[in-house]
Image: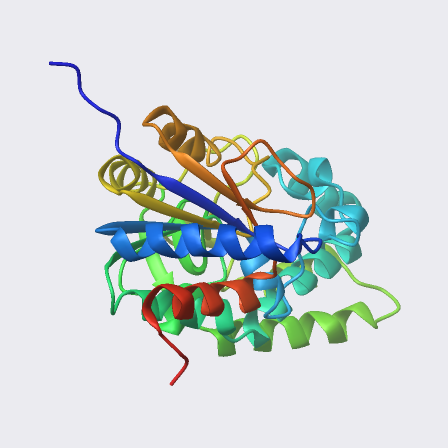
Length: 294
């Protein structure tokens, strides 16, 4: 007997242009019906969901890649070369990555995702490294690109946990260093040593996925298993350009996904909603379940 594909809904939440009011109402009704009927929802998030918490994205017009080209800052070879030749640039990059994360708090989208657990089974799969889903209270989170808060050895064995206070202290010290007339690499490395450096355990670094690295395990395998089991995927703030994480959406489609896209431009999809994550996610939860923020 031929196996019938599961119906999976992918909902992409990001800033969008207004839709025709009648058509928009129809899209919302259908999306709410699908969410209401779901037995297992995978929430797949990217940088867009954390942008509303003040964390800059990488790929947007004003993103970090505009100032810090990825070939110089997101490969190990590029980072080492930058550190040796331009330690001040390394200090600037580390500060601008960790300080917004250290100061960030969960926004309305993170909190709505956590509240969704009151209505159905939820697995969060995120490309973000900021720990905001965990801070909001989500129970099951698979961070496929890693986390800035966990430090591991070169063999990816757990070494220590950091918190936002640690990161903020480090960022403030880097800011002071950058004001110095002369900034040797040794001072930068000493300042960031809790996060990256050498000790009696050997080289240590944050549990992050740089270009060319394998995705974090067991997070990636658990994410794939969740996609294969679920009947609804909410894709929030993802560009769909980051592979292999974007393969999760393709896997959902292969199983007969109904695609609901929320995007500035109309895409080839079954449903199209309009709105920013912090506005759309709470409204969708209310539409489906009558849920509202506490």
